[in-house]
Amino acid sequence: MTNGDDQFPDSPPSQGGTGREGFPGEPVITADSARPVVLEKPDHPISRRDVDPDALGIIRRLHRFGFLAYLTGGAVRDLMLGRVPKDFDIVTDARPGQIRKRFANCFIIGRRFRLAHVRFPEGKLIEVATFRRVPDRGEELAPDAPVDPKLLYGTSREDAFRRDITINALFYDPDDDVVIDFVGGVQDLTGRVVRVIGDPAVRFAEDPVRVWRVLRHAARLGFNVDAATEREIPAQRDLLAASSGARLYEELNKDLAYETRPVFDALRSRGLLRIILGRAGETYESDSALYARLERLLEVEDRSRRAGLKLAAEEMYALIFWPWVEPLFGAEPEDIHNALHEAFDRAGMKATLPRKLKADFIQILTILGAMGRALRTGRMRWSLAKRSHFGQAGRLCFLIQKGRPPGPGESFETLLRESQPSGAASEPGKRRRRRRRPRGGRNRPPGGEPGRE
Ligand code: ATP
Ligand code: MG
Image (cartoon, rainbow, N blue to C red; front, side, top):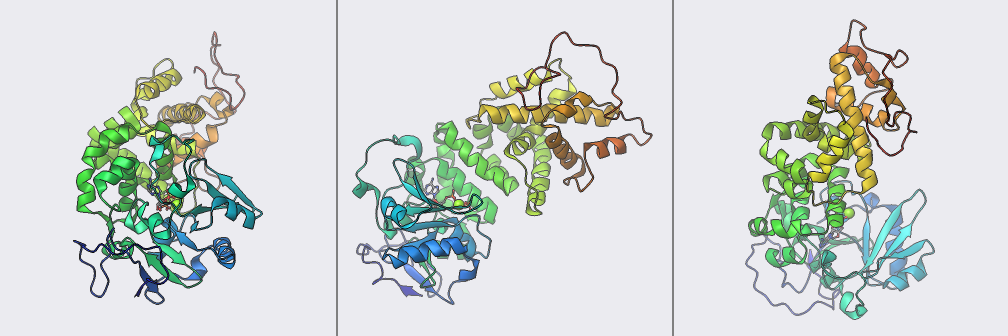
């Protein structure tokens, strides 16, 4: 381990004063530390073999053109922990225009903070960002506001300090095979602590969504939240509620993509589920038995996903709302479809869910309710089988009933046969004669707008 003085001429002089104990032999790093800790092999566990070859290629090409370029964010954190990173983000001192010139497959996105996306076959995408000077304050600043690039872009040190938590602000240079730490992230990885970089009150006020990010990373990794960070969380609830709905939706999707249960537990224990999910979250917070049902479903889901199951977004949303809406089916309202729409319209969720997504998961929930009834009565409304969401609802029904996804040859019909061993269950081909309805959407084409049942 060395202090990377020569490599980081941009580092300002140390202002000293730490207040935090380092591990024996480790320099103490704080927001005021001028020099990064540089971990050389074998002091860090990262192997180049575990880095995506396309990400390595981008970094090496930038180096060849004389730029600094590192792997950063979640990728370095996960590699340090021996976990498989989800994606490989790169930072560099090359400006977006300079990056674009060096890569044929590169597109620039964003207006205020312009980022380069380098694209590879099969939709693979690697983000290359220029070192930033100032934190991204979320929606607070107008995205189109003209900003002097000199104010926007900065040094590697500044880029580390504008990040959210220490363990997310490490850099890895695959050419020199070194990990560079300006913020004490290595120490926090060792101590299994999630700590906001800088003063938590200031950093949360800049962007309240960071509260959620702190809880997410602590929950997923099984780390503790640092005490000063935790103390600030209650004061941020209202600010989080005032964040843009689109931003909250974006963050919610990250939690629904993997390891959902531990993050939901952490959000619930801090009273944040009710902000994000409105009445549904409020019910999950106040009704422990109902939440226990959701927890069970999320556990099954997380486990199945680790085994390779991929649920579409609308299936995940149907799953998280199922325990909350299920009682509606008990009362068998005339028009369950409208009842569901009304329940969601009145829920007061702060996360803004797109209309199409909402229509899709409400369709799935409607069919799921009919399937539940069929498992109790033996009678299924097979007209629902024409709906494009029937297969998805069947898969969820299986997951809910059996605690695992359906295997080859298994489906909702398997469940129905098992629920009525005497063979009393209705079958797809043998529909009961039904009275014709005066109006309705029974003959709607699959995938059409949901209508009345
Ligand atoms: P995951 O493994 O879930 O993708 P991640 O740490 O990569 O985790 P991202 O949401 O992909 O998280 O963000 C990438 C990086 O950008 C983070 O590691 C962090 O350094 C920085 N970052 C993201 N959101 C913020 C924020 N609101 N404030 C400051 N830094 C942020
Ligand atoms: Mg990431």
